[in-house]
Image (cartoon, rainbow, N blue to C red; front, side):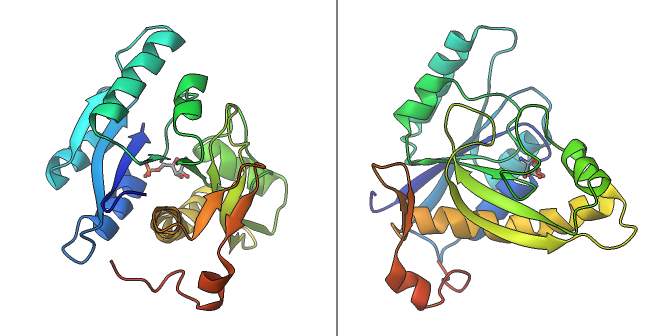
Length: 222
Ligand code: GRF
């Protein structure tokens, strides 16, 4: 990737994961990474205020338009920011196929459960954690995966398990998972930016063995 890797974020909600990326990459110690913009799926999303405070550009997908219009808007905006990596962090809309194809292997999503369980259409926010508790699962977690044309389906890059404790209400599980997301997502984006992980032509995720053995996953500063 380029000398400075330009990271764009798509979000719909409060944007705590966007904030985790800003905190990791918008620092003097990380001159070779830049969060260049956030695209919100709706006006009023909390992430827009976070972007304003961080001095990061933002855009909102115009409401009530076709998939095709969404695709054109997303492609133009992402290209305008010269985005190298696109990160879905709580983005509630399906990303149009043309956008996925244009960023193949450079577009990631974070999901608050251990995929392939508890994912797919309609599995978002509190619903995910409610389903985990109702199923009696003892372990849940966070997943970062490459995005393809379906919700929560693309090749998995990394996961972090989180215990579900006896009697935990879904909100407690959600809070525990979210903390982990804030560590996992920046680490995954850094791994992609540095070429430590990539999506190979055969559709499989390839991690660099050398890096893995050096235990730098969470330790690299900047
Ligand atoms: C996160 O739980 C993420 O995994 C999911 O949506 C939530 C977004 O939270 N895709 P935030 O807006 O980053 O706080």
